[in-house]
Image (cartoon, rainbow, N blue to C red; front, side, top):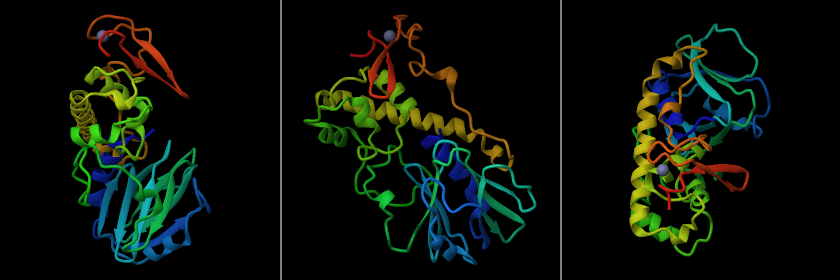
Length: 278
Ligand SMILES: [Zn+2]
């Protein structure tokens, strides 16, 4: 699943190939992805691309007439290809550009989407998103809320929900997926099952620091795969060998050697160290 670092990397990798280019043709090979593709995307025809930015895990391709909003879903990817590249299975949408290239969306599982936002409008998908965890290069909009210890402490008060779910809620902070939340909780020494409202001010500070460091690290690593965005089969890699708890239940803690445990929190398991995490 593409997480925030991969989406950021995609955004940075695609931007130079898109900025200033004119969209000469829009090819939709299906009517819907996760949701129907609105006909309004045709408003982007013959428009120049002014910006590509990221908000949460959405990519916004902006022109004067409005913005295309992409989400990569579970298995989607956007690539710049030569305009004569043969179509493969699951190539659903092409934006043909004025320089013999195209932006192609491929998504085998079709949990991704392509939506449209009119100028001055905020699409419903973007309306209730919490602050960004880190200020990254591709973010354009000034934020009303900042993700810091004060914010996290205030927002978590009186909440009985498990801290893991609280942090994965896009209204709390965007883009903290399953891997990143598990690793951040380990680094901050907090058990995933703790009620959010019981997290101390000091722990909030540690969590913010951990989340920011881990995401920044992943973005930096993702940056090393930028060249792949021109290759049809390139895919950004994770950092499996650097994981401390995610997917390691039953194995020894890299810090204290205790056997890592799995807490059952809804549909997904959360791995933690019974000694390092309180
Ligand atoms: Zn440990």
